[in-house]
Image (cartoon, rainbow, N blue to C red; front, side, top):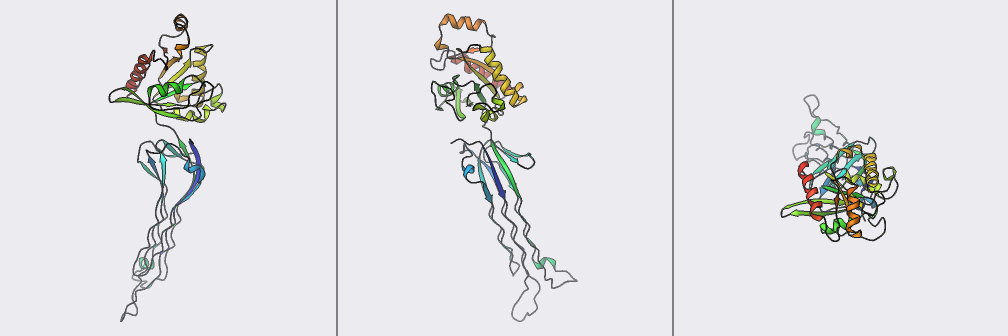
Length: 327
């Protein structure tokens, strides 16, 4: 199951209390203070794991705590520090503080770590308070509490290219035709219910990561349909590919609907480079294809992912656009 948004509560460990103790040894009845400090509390640490693709584990467990530090003891012994709790998250996860809405960190590369909640410091033992005027302090410091907060985990897929289109436009067919990804494909709308990623090779040693998100409908940016749940995954892409079925009544109007929904969701997407591909050209005659293409802008690409007609133009357009972006 693909889960890309969860809210959880985290609490770091509290520090251990300092110890009040005095040195005792045969023939030394009045030894000095030797109470040790408490150990530090464990922290909550987020770590990007390249092997994870979903936030599913966090759907069923919503509260995470790190271990408390242990109290100090006599003989100037410091208490053991609490163990950290590691939250292993997919690469591309954004950590947001729920109370302020502030983005705390973006796990945008594998193995990067971020301390989401820091453990409390251990309290000082009475040895710390010894002074020339107080040789036998009988006080120790309590440990400090660890940080606690509620956070949102929001996964945004890391892809070079994002496929955007109406339901059943042929996005999943394109992804399966040019990569090893195997999204569900069927001849009815809303076949794709979760985003899919695939690696598309241009040539030896040169490729890109392509993402297919569920189909959009008019009003998706306001919550209609299924695709609105996954529009966030387009925000990271360097290139947007509009996928339009050649059998649509008005191809140019379809492009405008898709553009409007993306920009309504995030205005910055207006400046994102695009490639427009008209798909399923194997379903119309050559004469109809010529008539349709004469009515559309010259930069539109016509392709059939099934027969591979127009595939070279499609891949070259994507490669050139990515090269221009330095992606």
